[in-house]
Length: 93
Image (cartoon, one colour):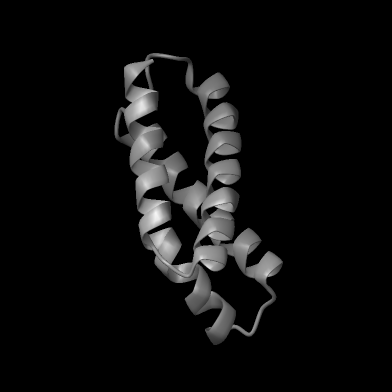
């Protein structure tokens, strides 16, 4: 949920455009999730060299969608629901 709250803050604080703030924060979120994948035993048994790029692409694409949803809806709740649904779907597969 931090990503949903911080994208508007980046827009104001750094005076970036919506696209630049989304790219900047998406890379931060991807780095955070990659650390979790590598050091917290979060992957599903896949080899790390294969799981890492696949997971990074997934996190970056979902973060872009979440940032767009946060900026368009002006609410954090659609992002929280989408993020929770994604986690639930991912754990079921």
